[in-house]
Structures are given as C-alpha cells and as structure tokens.
Length: 499
Image (cartoon, rainbow, N blue to C red; front, side, top):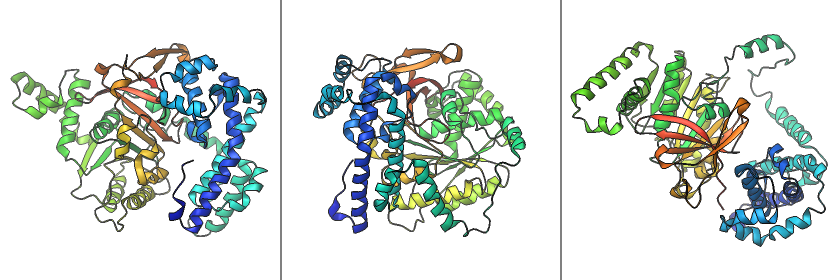
C-alpha cells in the first residue's frame, strides 16, 4: 500500500493510516493463499470474481496479474516456471518485481502447504477485510474493532453498521417509505416481464450494451472519461442518438464546450453513412464548396432529417456559462415534459462555484445532479462526459484513479466508462501487441482470437464501474471511424495493469 506523508496528517488521519496498515496485515495471509492456489490449480481462476483491486500487497498483486494474463488473456492452462518465464520475457518491469519477491521458488514452496479445498473460505476472508479497509478509507473508525471483526463474517459486519446508520438516519425524513417485500410479488414479476426497466441499447455496441444494460435511464448516472481530442462527444452521439431515433426516445444534450452546429454536422454525417450508406467525411462539410453531386446528396440527407423534426428526438442546449444549478433546472424542466434521457457534455467546475478547490466543487455538483435524477426524484438518466487527468496519457490500463482528486464523482455513478485509442506498440506485430478475442458459435462457445489493425481505427473501452454487470475484468474493442460516424463493437481484449 502506498504510504502518505505522515508528518502532514492530522492525529485522526495518522490513526486511520495506522489502522489501514493493520487491516492490510490481516489480509496478507488470505491473499497469499488465494494466489498460491491459483498457481497450484489454475482452472480455479475462471471461477473467481476477483480483480487486481481486491489485493493490497504488491507482492501478491504481481503474482495475481501474471497468472491472470497467462490464464485468462493468453488462454493457457499451466502456470509452471517455464510458462511464467516466457511470459515475463515480454514484461521486464513485471519480471523485476517478480524476481524481487522470490520468483517461482516462493510459489513452489507455498504450494506444499496450501489446501485448494479451503479456497472459498480464503476468498470470503479477503472480501471481508477489503470491505473493512474501505470503511476505514471512508472515514469510519474501526481501529478498536479489528480483533472482533476477525471472528465475524462480512455479512455480520454489514448488518451491524446498517443498524447504526438506520438508527441515526431513519427519523430525519418525514417521507421515508417502508415496503413489505413479500407483498405484490406477482405484480412485480409481471412488471419485470414487460421489460420496461431495460436501458436504451447503445447503437452498434451489443457487447457494451450487454455488460452495462445500455443506457439505463431509470434514475442512473453514467460517465464517460477520455483525454482531450479522443472523441468523447462523438462517441456519446453515436451511442445514443441513433438508438433514440430507432426507439423513438427523446434525448437532451446540454453542452458547454461546443455549439449546436457541431451536432448538426454529426447528424448529417451519421445519416449519410449509416442510413444511405454513402461515404461522407467530416472534412467535406468543413471545407465547403460542394460539388453538384455532394450538394444534391446533402439536400437528400437534410430532407430525411427534417421529415423527423416534429418528433423532437434530439434537442441540444448550449450553455454560455456552465453552472450545475442551470443544468438541474434544465433537467427539471424537460423531465416535466416527459423526457427521461439527458447528456451533460462536458462536466467541469461551475462558474459560480463557492469553493477554490475544484475537485470538491465537482464532487458536490455530482451529488446535486444525482439528487435531481435519482429514482425518488425525477427518475431520469444522465450521461456525463469528463476529461481525464494528464497522467492518463501514459497509462495503458485506465482506472478511476485517472480522474485525479475529483475521482469521488464516480461515487454516484451507476456506470463509468473510460476510452482511449491503442498505443502504436499495441497493434498487430508490435512489441506489446494486445490479445483480442470474440465469441462465435452456439451459445458463444467458440473463442476466436484476432489482432488490432490500424485501418480499423479501433477504440478501447474500459468499464471501471458497473452496477449492472462485470467491472474491469476485460475491455471492449470497437471499430470507430470518427470521420464517418461508423462505429461497431468487434470483440474484447485484456490490457495489463501499469506498474
């Protein structure tokens, strides 16, 4: 675990840091046992719902990542000294850490004592201490309870804290409602059967839709982070507007870094290439001085678009100055008109923020937005885009840490996505070529490997938070020609963690 500068901490913060170290000590044995079992019986890795973030000790993070890449990413079934050595030839930084921690000899020694039959117990123990560690990081005082927690299950700890919170908060809101969950179950099943709670599918993105339920606009916030110039606005357009047209769903874009002309161009380009299947690039619209044929085609696309204007599918609202209060008012206004999907492009500090600390201001703004859209309020969906920190430019595996100090904006999100284009050395034949795959055949039983090609203009999407499915187990690869607005999911890949 990374250590903070203790001299600059308050007494309470110092105590919390010491508590984190103690919790980490409680975790080390189960981390070691789990990883050792993986090397003893690699097939168990397929049954685990663990990611690198579940481990606190860098030693076991290193061994886990090596195993994960060899078994899951490369599809091999053995973790012997030779197989690991061949893999590490391609990862010198990882090899240095691996050798520092004792290499294969340490694993070989540990395998003699660990019992595979105890794996589930080790995993439960790991999850329990991870939860306690998160409680500590959140500010809960758990120092005096650690020895007691050793003899308690995660569920028992949860129930205890839930009781405390209920006792403190249950009487502050006169509108608190209680439900007998055993009642009206048949009516609830009938409601589920209608599929009314499904999200709007992302257009031409069945893999991403399957993982995240598309854009579930029933009281959820989705996020999309990327570096400047990566195409956040264009990707959001391509995901949502075509699907909104198909499903007759209205959507409002609230924008603060462009004007409405950008989205007029995006719509024309999309219609030309996807509806009429006629190639049209954005630079053609930018350059002007159209040929007679191009002008005739543009008029044709315009007619197709204007024939749908009375449906008011796509509304764009440019802001002269960004303020979260203005956005909240817009959502309140248009949700009253029956619109339940909103996009905020781009999230940033409000011009009228009352704090000099940008990250705190943005965190409060996100809470304000969630209070507007949540199920107990307007029950609508909000998709926000935001820019990643500069440090992410060099990162291969994007995580919520790349948001910087404002990473707590993710707390109220149901889904958070991050995108980047591949590095030059990740394409076919290069030094760090990515292993990509797709599924085919009945029930997706066949795994077909493929390689990234520059002509496909691929985009890699990281699912860094997901309340509707898996988080960070793998990444999604898409063909994305942002010049013609033709985008399509093509498979999966596994990007190794940065070290």
